[in-house]
Image 1: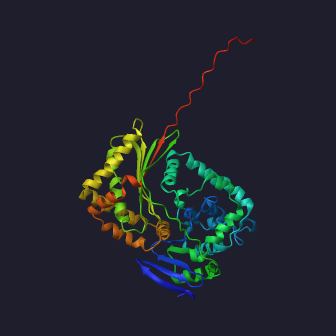
Image 2: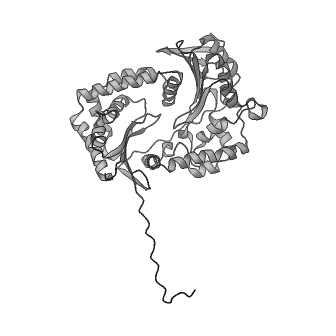
Image 3: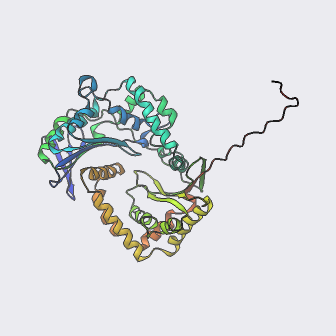
Amino acid sequence: MAKGITKVKELGGITEYRLEKNGLRILLVPDSSVPVAGCMVTYNVGSRNEAVGYTGSAHLLEHLVFKGTDKFNPQKGTSMDKLLESKGAAMNASTSFDRTNYYQVLASDQLPLAIEIEADRMRTARFLESDRTSEMPVVRNEYEMYENDPASSLDKDVWGAAFMAHPYHHPIIGWKSDIEGVSIERLKQFYDDFYWPNNATVSVAGSFDEEQVLVLIEKYFGVHSAAPHVIPAVYTEEPKQEGPRRVQIQRAGNQVVSISHKIPNALHEDIPALLMLASVLYEDKTSRLYKAFVDSALATDVAVYCNQLHDQSLFQTSITLAPGTTHAKAEQLVLKEYARIATEGITTAELTAAKRSARVYASRRKDGAYALLSALNEEIAMGDWTRFITLHEDLEKVTGKDVQRVAQKYLIVDQSTTGWSVNAPQKVPAKTKASAKPTKR
């Protein structure tokens, strides 16, 4: 065992270690059947950790951290992007409600470079006003891209209406004025609040020597201390919703109906049944909403999400209407299927199909280093990485009665937020009055 590293636990082929010096969590998932390895660093910080004035900071910071560190920067000819690209690495980063991650998938013999770069930018990222100035328009363009899509724009408003106090109220990408106005000093403060070893997990998957990787992690990440302060906690709780909420946007383009209901956090015991409920509603051509909307040509797209987050979340159904389908009819049909499940339950065939889909889902989560790291990353963000192993077992235990029970418990009107995206009314040009006297030319 590498010096200063303690084994914590092992489950399903994944071993957790702890770097004693600074509290860094390490997850190793060896797989000698592939010739590559992936390295991902997950920080327990996302839009959930933001507030008015600096919403979008986690995402904008993600962009800026790629600009360079004291050691790896374009001015020295050591751009981290170019170094990794020269080694054939696939790399990127992403930000969500509960986490930010950075990753590389590359040939196993190049893994030391990935570990060194990730360790370096954990604490020595440079923050230049020139970088903020150049990168801000890129992020703003992302924001405007989502704004120009009716479904995305409606989804932003639905979350904003469903959560009035909790930070899930804010879009992950932030509000436009915050993206444009946040200072480089505020971004640096955000970095110094959250980018520390004891607020991060390093996950390595693929073909590698475990002892060598632990030595590398200790060498490069061990130079950092734990945070000199307590990592800022999110203590805001969403007040109880006391009635249905509705939002509407007027926009040219696709017409959408979105129906959302409050559900518990990802670690709650009801989540497996809610995931099965989502599968029964819309998974394949045999699912209920496919038959109700697609087979009857009432919709061009249907989606059902059981969002799994660190805190209270939303169960969502989104219907993109076909021409001629009214918003009221689509909403009525969705609620009708909800009511049928709540009163009549589901069939054995539906439960069997949902469990079959769950097995496919579990298999895909392990399909290669990147897929595995991405899935593991989400479980870390939700609060317990072991759920990556145990979730499939929990899904297999779900009964038809469980699905009916959660439909009755959560798909209730008092906990709903409904959104419509409707066509903007066409502006009729104002008629001009005829002049009393002819105009002379």
